[in-house]
Image (cartoon, rainbow, N blue to C red; front, top):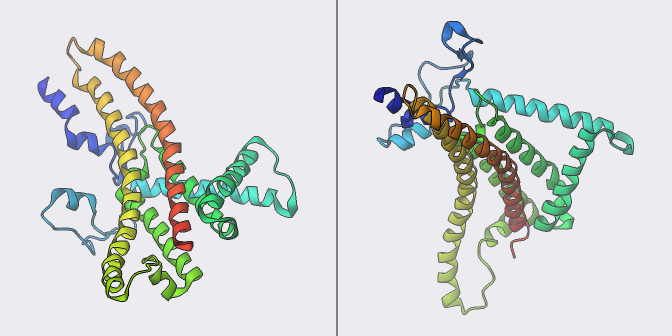
Length: 303
């Protein structure tokens, strides 16, 4: 009994429900021969990884997975999300072709999202002159993050945004967009100069200040995008881990008299937390998109 409880609340078991894997855990009646486990096909996986972390730090080695081209659960979800976005918005684009009005609740809702991000996120953060060309990027980022977050609400699946690989890639795309847009607007030398504000100081004082501020601003730019990735990761993973702990209390109390009191409490707690996670899914997608727009605006208009 004690062994069962410790296994249910074991950190490895809890984090296993929110981490990426090469298989899916489904109800046992869907895969009775494998006890509810479905292994994904691995057509490209290498026997020996090209890159593998051996730092001696378990947190780093487990977070940064080997580069072996394996096909994972989160990759499958991201592929489905990309297909959903393409189907929705290619259809919307064709419906709006020629200046026609979008018809239907879904298409009207999608069009409203586009106008909202153009008028309330892109233009205030980037400016009316430059904002419109970044709207497709911001729109895509928001929808991709949102759908990935919402997939985490489905049982037996998971949220790809609870993985550093996904949030890091999204932050990397934003970083590339920030740097590329700044260089395109200001030029290479202008981009370098944007890291140092104008200072009306004597030359003997100004030069040391520039040499000091330039590396600090460069590191700050990298840190901002790293935090962008970690913020989304922490919020999505944290909520799913807490939800897993609440549900694990049911299994941990099995075959004890406490099960009759813990089970309804855990079910009610998990339901309430799931509703909160639904709000967080939308909120974190919006925050990620808003910060991306803010970083682009700061790069295009540095002063």
